[in-house]
Length: 389
Image 1: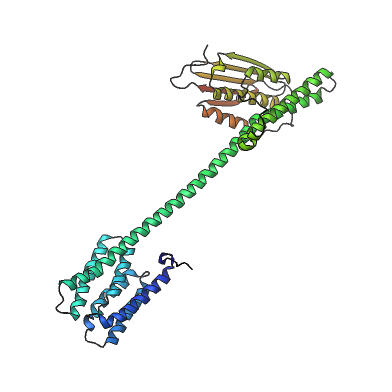
Image 2: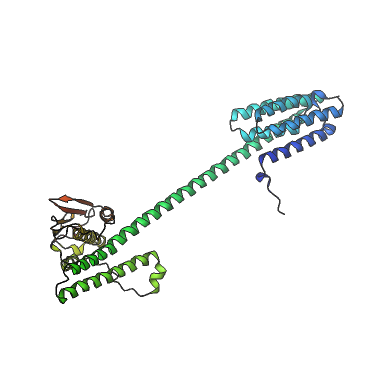
C-alpha cells in the first residue's frame, strides 16, 4: 500500500501528529536539555509535565495562531521549550505575510530564547545565542516559504479553474454559433428548393384542367428542384461528416451556382413575373460577394412567391465605383398567400449576418404595399471597382 503524502492529510490529523511529536520531544528534552528556564533546579517530572502542557496547546495553533504563539513564547522563558517554540513560529510564518509581524515575532522570540537559556545557563555565550536565533528565525522563514508556495498553488489552481470555465463557455458559444449557421444554411439551400416544389405542386392542383404539356413542365420543375435540394443537402451533411462525404462520389458541382440570370429564369418558369436589370460585371466580383448576392435574390424571390403571390418583382444590380448595390422590390400581392409554406424565421436574419461579414448592410422593409430588400457591399479599401464596366 503506497504511503499517503503528508500534504494530503486532513488539517486536524496533521495538527494531532504535530502535537503528539512536540509533547513527546518536550518530555524527552526535559532530561537532556541543559536549561529549563526559570524552572531550572526543580524535579525533572515537573519540568517534563510543564513542557508537555506547552506542547498540547499546539492543537489550537490553526484556530488561534497568534494566541498560541504568544503563550509558547512566555512559557519558553519559564521552562525553555525550543521544540514547541519552533512549531509555533513555523505556524505564524505560514499564515501571515506581513513582514512587520514576522520581524516582531522574530525579535520577541529571540529575546525569549535568550532569557530562557540564560535562566538555566547564566554563562551562555555566542554559541547558545546563535542556537536560539536559529531556532526562531529558521522556522519563521520555512513557514513563510511554505505559505507563499501554498498561496501560489491556490492562485494557479484558481486560474486553471477559471480557464476551464472560460473554455467551456467558449465551446458552448461555438457550438451554438455552429448550430445557428447550420440552421441558416439548411434554410438557404434546402428551404428555397422545397418552397419551389410546393409552389409548383400547388400550381398543378390549381391548373388541373390544363393540358399535359403544362403538367409535364411543372413535374419537371418539381423533379429538378428535388434533385438540387438533395444534392445541396448532401453537401451540407458532407461538411458535418467529412468521412461520409468522402466515401461516395460527389453528385453536385464543386462551384456554387451564382448566376442571377438562371435564378430569375427559374423563377419565371414557376410563374413569377420577374424583371432583372444588371449594370456592370458582377461575374468579376469576389466569389463570397457573388454568393451573398445570389442568396439575397433567391431568398427575396422565394419570400415574394410565398407572401406576395402574383406580385411583380424587380431585381436591380448595380456595380458602382463605391461598391455593389442590389435592390429586390415586389409589388402588392394580387391574391391571398397560401398557408402551405410556413416561415422558418431565419431568412432575413441569416442574410443580414452574411452581408455584414462582407462589410455591407442589408435593409428589409415594406414599400408601397409590397416589400423592398436593399443591399450594399462596399469595395475593399484601395481595391479597384472590379464590377465597373
